[in-house]
Length: 303
Image (cartoon, one colour):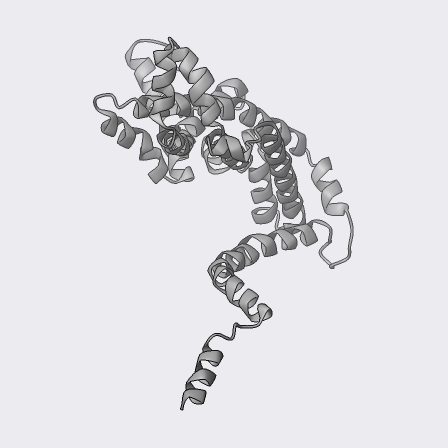
């Protein structure tokens, strides 16, 4: 009897082989990550590979660089590159600055903060095309703005005419700023709320002014959120499309709209894929620049 008990105890304490323990340790994380990996493979990696293949093939499936050459020789290619880069140069700093001011006001806990948050977040619930149509009703020849000018006895102005590219560009910037600033604001508000208030209070005790606390305490600690906001907003700015189409049509070509026209109107998916490839390349280069210039070390994140 005692020999039987001794045998059972020995069986219970026998450890599992190291290979089996390793498999068990990695099984749960692998199962949890699998849906995300599959999602990325089917909806991001596979379309990217398809676009890359389409951009270097002709209609007969022969490998060639003709789609890329045709894109570069297209009359709208360089204006599209210029307009897209101009929009990014103007939009991204403007939106990040506005979003930072809005986030700081919300984080200050002033009276009516909740009302401002709801008002500023309204554009998040509106689609790109709907936002473009809203601003078209304002800037059109017989829109609200010209009606107001006429009511005040002032001359009207064709803001969206091809003869006035500057006013057309400004109209697109205003519409896109209104539409997409809120998403940057949400990211920055989330970043501000994880910064301990004790840091600012300690700086105030040592005599730091509000500007000094913002420059030397808040902004350095907000750098990870700023990095995410800049990357996200720049990538989305390269894809700006519906607002430009609604307000300016072909009078203001951008890279995404040219990809749309080549695919839909000209039925040439190869040149459209070449445009998509250019957008992808620009986005990756900008992301690498942001990751390099706004690099945040682990010890900085941990405070």
